Image (tube, rainbow, N blue to C red; front, side, top):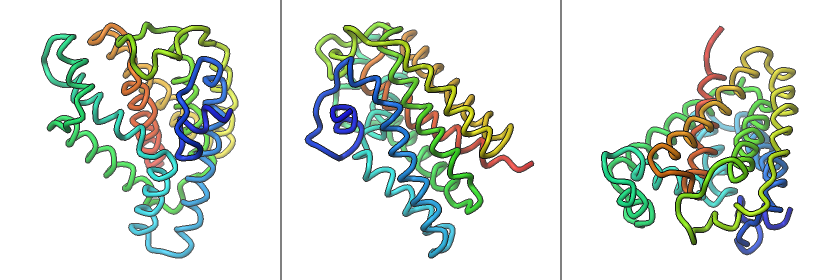
Length: 232
């Protein structure tokens, strides 16, 4: 639990995760989601929707140390342009931010901010989305090859479990209870998007990387928030 919390949040000393810590990813998602949900509920009581949304966005980025945002940027630079596989991995390892990364980060942040401006957003669905995204990521190392030997996520491969996938069921149930069909659809869209990102990475890189796992958390959450914003 400590290793997962330290890796996925700013708490602790940034301990590298291992296969055993993967089982705690859904629990950490629950904690982060709860913090973001409480921030959303609290800020909308005191500030205008636009400012409240900015504060919620900031809380999420601070709690996670912008780790997933960085991974999303690197993934965009590596997977979106046309280039050879080896070159993709080189680009993703390069700390320089390219045009694809810049545009992707701006779009993702603006979309999340716009979603958070809604004061009626069901906070329990936020929790469910944050759990679902990290649950998918927890299972990926058990199912998909690693594309970059020696990278940060290399330690996740050996002994990685598949059973944490069961946590998708309570996340789906929570969202359904909180917001009916729309909540359930948001979680399902989140899971589907995460799976598509991983599949895309397998196609272009031959497997996943730590950056791809970050993108498979942030982008699917954003898609889920977009679904929640759909008006009946």
